[in-house]
Amino acid sequence: MPNQLREGFLWGNSVSSMQTEGAWNEGGKGLSVYDIRKPSEFASDWKVAIDAYHRYEEDFDLMQQLGMNCYRFQISWSRVNPTGDGEFNEEGIAFYDKFIDALIERGIEPMICLYHFDMPLHLAETYNGFISRKVVDAFVRYGKEMVDRFGKKVKYWITFNEQNLYHMPGAFRISGYMKGEKTLDELYKIQHHVMMAHASIANYIHENYKDIKIGGMLAYSEIYPATCKPNDVFVARKLDEFFNYNLLEAFTNGCYSHEVMSYVKNEGIDMGILEGDLDILSSLKSDFLAFSYYASTTVNSELIPEGTPVNYYMEYGKQENPYLDSTEWKWQIDPLGFRDILNKIYNRFKLPVFPIENGIGVKETWDGEHEIQDDYRIRYHRDHIQAMKDAIFIDGVDVVGYLGWGLIDILSSQGDMRKRYGVVYVNRENHDLKDLRRVPKKSFWWLQKVIKSNGADLGD
Image 1: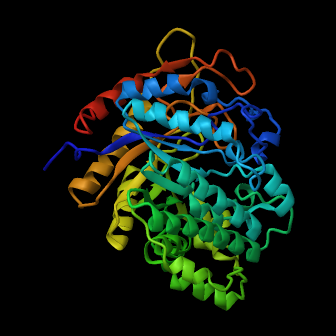
Image 2: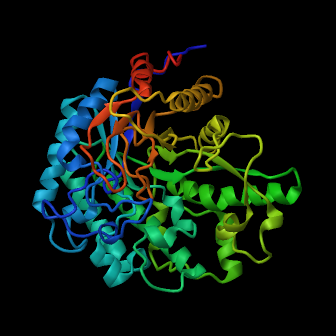
């Protein structure tokens, strides 16, 4: 059985703009919803992040030293269009042009994400985010402009980070929604509007750019039944259908899940589907299917109150798995779940699969002198890369690449610098920026060896 991954396999790093760039009021950037969030005891503000706006070449040098050949980053919508629906900011576009060139010069394939939760503040305050068709139209205009500007340089694209999150209660926080009752109808309208935005961009790319590849992306958490009771098994399967297969069907076959649409009809849910929407959706195709994976969990059907909408099952039914270890953030470590998801996606949809986020968040401190001995991170990535290799070599899954999350320390999704994913330490804390020095950890040298061997050498 082969041990080395195929030639051209993509090894790299994934980030978002608000967790890395800083420069919140430089270069003509407009305000996003993140720029007005207040710091708290365990959360920084978003004004500096890791100052990648000024230090990205230093970070790219570290990626090149690691041997990485892919970097998935996000264009900040409000940096290239300050209000989201107004004039484009040429200074912001020029920044990303130089940014992309700097990657290409180092042999690193750029991969663009268009939206990672940081709605331009004007669109959130004026239209309440993706609950409004005006925001869908503004996003499509922005997305097409970015494709036209960068499509000749950038081969890989996604529209929305973890698009299935718009089916979950957290959708209201990440969609620019600022006021309202957070009804089930609104949740389904947001998820449909986001899908229409994605489909419009993907269709535009496939109609106009033969060399660009675009796919949909999910946040895929393996959900196990808490017991072998039939109802636990049924609920776990239903969650997989609603949270994952529903969008995968749309990404691949141009239609929502029959089960989900039957639920919508039976419950009288108004998704806001307009005439022509399903025609746009029916044209949707994907070149690959992308997902993030960090952990698995379990669901106990007995904890879910009768009548709870499927989309809210995990608000009640989530339960710790006693057979898995957990991080200090209560994320359960499960490499086999990673392998299982790779198989489930590929076997059902027959498209190349691209895991573009994977990693372990841990509280770490640096004494200013000695290398951080993060053997736990080496163990996590080693076990997940091995699970991926098993999916490829034993199960026959076609995998495009493996991108870790935030492999140079960044703010967490909640703004907490204590939760570190990187193989490179960034010397700042939540409320003390220090010198923002980049310092490789022990895992840096391990990952360098893994990439140099193209996945053959996973030893400690």
